[in-house]
Length: 82
Image (tube, rainbow, N blue to C red):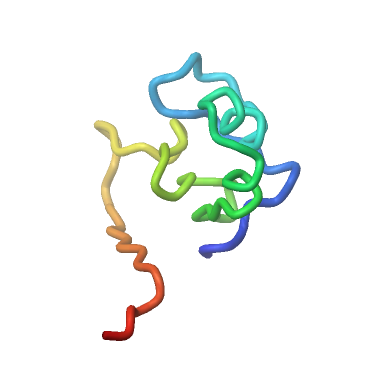
Protein backbone atom coordinates (compact mmCIF):
# COMPACT_ATOMS: atom_id res chain seq x y z
CA UNK A 1 0.00 0.00 0.00
CA UNK A 2 1.32 3.44 -0.91
CA UNK A 3 0.63 5.92 1.88
CA UNK A 4 2.03 9.02 3.57
CA UNK A 5 4.83 8.51 6.04
CA UNK A 6 3.64 7.95 9.63
CA UNK A 7 5.65 9.48 12.50
CA UNK A 8 6.63 6.07 13.98
CA UNK A 9 7.45 4.26 10.71
CA UNK A 10 10.75 2.38 10.89
CA UNK A 11 12.94 0.68 8.30
CA UNK A 12 16.47 -0.68 7.87
CA UNK A 13 17.88 1.30 4.94
CA UNK A 14 19.62 -0.81 2.29
CA UNK A 15 23.33 -0.02 2.45
CA UNK A 16 23.17 0.96 6.13
CA UNK A 17 24.13 -0.89 9.29
CA UNK A 18 21.14 -3.25 9.10
CA UNK A 19 19.62 -1.64 12.19
CA UNK A 20 16.06 -0.33 11.98
CA UNK A 21 15.68 3.45 12.38
CA UNK A 22 12.75 5.82 12.31
CA UNK A 23 12.23 6.97 8.73
CA UNK A 24 11.81 10.62 9.77
CA UNK A 25 15.16 10.51 11.60
CA UNK A 26 16.86 8.90 8.60
CA UNK A 27 15.42 11.56 6.28
CA UNK A 28 16.69 14.30 8.60
CA UNK A 29 20.19 12.76 8.57
CA UNK A 30 20.01 12.81 4.76
CA UNK A 31 19.66 16.59 5.01
CA UNK A 32 16.04 16.85 3.92
CA UNK A 33 14.18 19.86 5.30
CA UNK A 34 11.13 19.35 7.52
CA UNK A 35 8.64 20.39 4.84
CA UNK A 36 9.97 17.61 2.56
CA UNK A 37 9.94 15.03 5.37
CA UNK A 38 6.29 15.86 6.12
CA UNK A 39 5.28 15.07 2.52
CA UNK A 40 7.23 11.82 2.12
CA UNK A 41 5.37 8.71 0.92
CA UNK A 42 6.22 5.08 1.58
CA UNK A 43 5.36 1.68 0.14
CA UNK A 44 4.18 -0.37 3.13
CA UNK A 45 3.57 -4.11 3.41
CA UNK A 46 2.25 -6.18 6.31
CA UNK A 47 5.94 -6.59 7.29
CA UNK A 48 6.52 -2.83 7.45
CA UNK A 49 7.97 -0.11 5.22
CA UNK A 50 9.42 -1.69 2.06
CA UNK A 51 10.46 1.51 0.29
CA UNK A 52 10.83 5.16 1.17
CA UNK A 53 9.63 6.24 -2.25
CA UNK A 54 12.29 7.91 -4.34
CA UNK A 55 14.90 7.51 -1.60
CA UNK A 56 15.83 4.01 -0.35
CA UNK A 57 14.45 0.46 -0.06
CA UNK A 58 14.32 -1.48 3.19
CA UNK A 59 17.03 -4.13 3.65
CA UNK A 60 14.49 -6.80 4.61
CA UNK A 61 12.55 -6.23 1.39
CA UNK A 62 15.56 -6.04 -0.95
CA UNK A 63 16.07 -8.51 -3.80
CA UNK A 64 18.52 -11.26 -2.85
CA UNK A 65 19.46 -14.87 -3.60
CA UNK A 66 16.28 -16.20 -1.99
CA UNK A 67 13.98 -13.86 -3.93
CA UNK A 68 11.36 -15.74 -5.94
CA UNK A 69 8.95 -12.94 -6.93
CA UNK A 70 9.65 -9.28 -7.68
CA UNK A 71 7.01 -6.54 -7.87
CA UNK A 72 7.80 -3.48 -9.97
CA UNK A 73 6.25 -0.18 -8.95
CA UNK A 74 6.13 3.04 -10.92
CA UNK A 75 5.04 6.05 -8.91
CA UNK A 76 3.93 9.07 -10.91
CA UNK A 77 2.85 12.49 -9.84
CA UNK A 78 -0.36 14.17 -10.97
CA UNK A 79 -0.82 14.72 -14.70
CA UNK A 80 0.23 18.15 -15.89
CA UNK A 81 -2.12 20.24 -17.97
CA UNK A 82 -0.78 21.80 -21.14
